[in-house]
Each structure stands twice: as structure tokens, then as C-alpha cells.
Image (cartoon, rainbow, N blue to C red; front, side, top):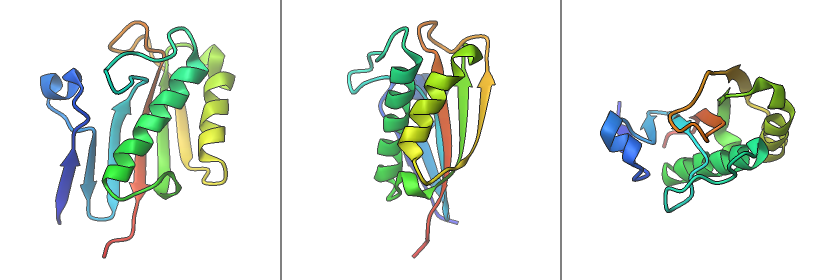
Length: 130
């Protein structure tokens, strides 16, 4: 099976030793993705909705680099530091995926790698192979 990886260039990938996304056959797995912008700065400090939007946008960019779209996503996992704010995070997810409606989980975690990060998103996509 052919395997392709992409990197986003964040410091975490080289330090920890992982890829932003991996395509193996017809599956693409996007690693836990947070709300950083192109300069590596956190977007939406204190705003779970804004962080979810940015993280989902970052997931989409990773998918596009592997010839997929949000319509190919079959599974997401949302790691949040305050599940009481589920409605803001869920609203961003709903708006982003619209009719795609992937299977998903939202799980509260004690914290993420940066204490100002409140949302991390993983995704799995299934694509047609040529």
C-alpha cells in the first residue's frame, strides 16, 4: 500500500515525530489539529468557537494537500478543555460540515499542549483511489 505524509511545519511535528496527515490507500488520517495560523500563532484565545473554526480550517488544508475535501471526512474527534462550552464548538463543527455529517466524538481533556488551546480536532477521510 502506498503511503504519503504531509507536514504543516509546526514545531510540534518535528519535536514529537509525527505527520500532520497520512494517506494510506483510500484513507487519510489528520492528526490532532489546533487553532494556529500560518505563523504558528494561536487564533481565538478564550473563544472555543473561533478555535474550532480555525482548527477545522487547518484540517481542511491538510486534506486538500492530499487531494481530499471536507466532503470525504467520515470521522472527527473533538478534544475540548471545557465540555460545558460544547454548544459553541458543536456549532462550528455543524457549520463546517453542513450535510457531510461525519461520525464524531467530543471528549473533555484536562488540558492541551498549550494551556490557551481549548479545542483540538482529529479527522479521518475516505477517498477514491485511482
